[in-house]
Image (cartoon, rainbow, N blue to C red; front, side, top):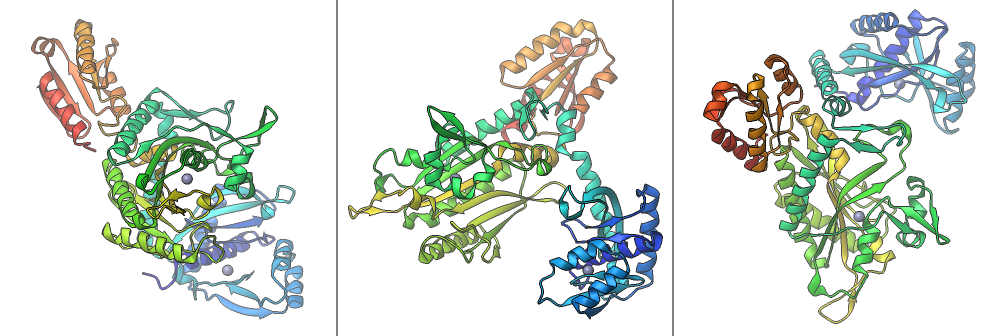
Length: 576
Ligand SMILES: [Zn+2]
Ligand SMILES: [Zn+2]
């Protein structure tokens, strides 16, 4: 363990990289070099384009400086002195950055070897404490992100406290690249995004659509079993709805432009909540009806900048697995505990067991009665404890309209994804004037909670593809078994077997091309088929198949009855 946070190590590594660039390109002009989520970068203005050889040379120079344990020395300058020093070195970008520093701020410089940087810090004490570095890529980047400004060259790298941690990260990144859902989505023919249709809009191909269909059926059945009712609502709503909800005030830039119908403005929905509220408002409600648990697989559209779109993980059109719980103050604690229990059960079905809740509490600016906030936060905390979790608290990190719990889920290669959200809302019940008649015959305001277990089907699907590396378990696999015929003589038997297994509800196909068995096996493996059933003359006679399981390997010859039992077992137990 290093005594420094990773961010400090990485930002210090950015300084070191700049120092190495200065050695190799004495006329270089420097912009800034922050730490990022996975590493660091630095932007440079150089007299020529960087090559991969340059990157190697820069990395080598950095490693040398790590060995020399160069101190990071700081000193202060007045603004006039700082301007003079930067101008003398022709550091035009730094001079621009200096203007952004507030008048009353102390101006500090840090020296590492021959390199001096205008910087606030903090840094490690000496370059030996940076541990291990790796430079990863080069990209173009406009100064201050503005395309009217000059284009600079950006070098990305990463740093860790030790070589072992760096290697573990690089291995994980390699594994993640192999599992990239965009790559696998194409290889396995699951989905695509068409430039003609538009960025961020997902097209589900037959195999992807089959998995989604299985997921949706499972999702609806589980919700119904666990006390939810299912809703359907329209894709568009009038401006008055979005004015009431407040979306046109605080979310307009996330919404698509209005379309005019009969002189009225209609908006494509970015959220489902206002529609659910209108169902609630369709008549007077009594305390006897509460709690209401209303769920919908609701497709929404949100404007996301094209630069942040990322296959299924970040799209512009997506289907939320949404639900709203409307209940009395007395019911809230049990309801939250139940949502949490239910989420964990659903996650388990997909093979995710490492889950961590994060609680976000009241920010400085918030709507709603502070006493209600306290009540809500307590119920969230108690629910987390009841489920047997330690809860990390993000003090003041809640939305202005209510506290929330986020569940972060760890995937097969150790990455943590923010997935489920259980969000209180003190805003919408107020804005829509939602009420119910209590036992006392008087009107009361109900509690409202938004919750999404998987977030959106698209994002969840993208993560599933990466979690399973495309090898979906039998219960989700679009093709659970494939029959491979050895010769043309088994043609009819293959077709009959497919019909028999499909008749029992299994998803089966037959490969009776006159290709070699080797080629057919190769294709079936490429498609990650859970069971490969090879049939020749002998198997045809015995009503059997030579079986290869993706999970268990060669199983030898099994009767078709045994194959059916195996499939059923995997299916019923959701064997991963
Ligand atoms: Zn610095
Ligand atoms: Zn909602």
